[in-house]
Length: 99
Image (cartoon, rainbow, N blue to C red; front, side):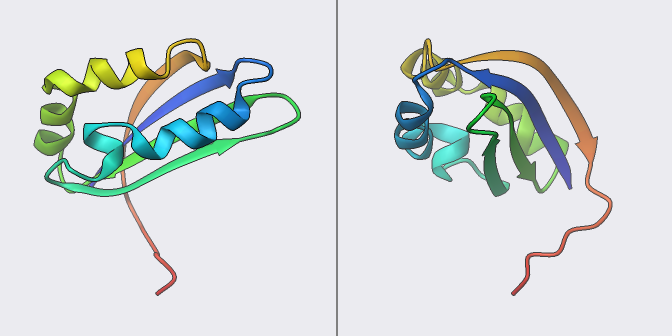
């Protein structure tokens, strides 16, 4: 498995908007992409700093999601809600889903 992690800062006053919009994010975060295992958004409500993380079965699935036309459309839909600072890819060594 592989994970894409983005460090973000939420625009002041837009946390509720982002919380509402993020689950509707087309493609990767709506769960319509093949190979998506999980998607998370973590934000410190006091500072606005956070991370978004998607977990994929393999690198090919993740890269295919990034190449999909709706990938950029999703960012346009959330324009102004956050600033992205970094995007990093990690190999998932261990995962426990709690089930």
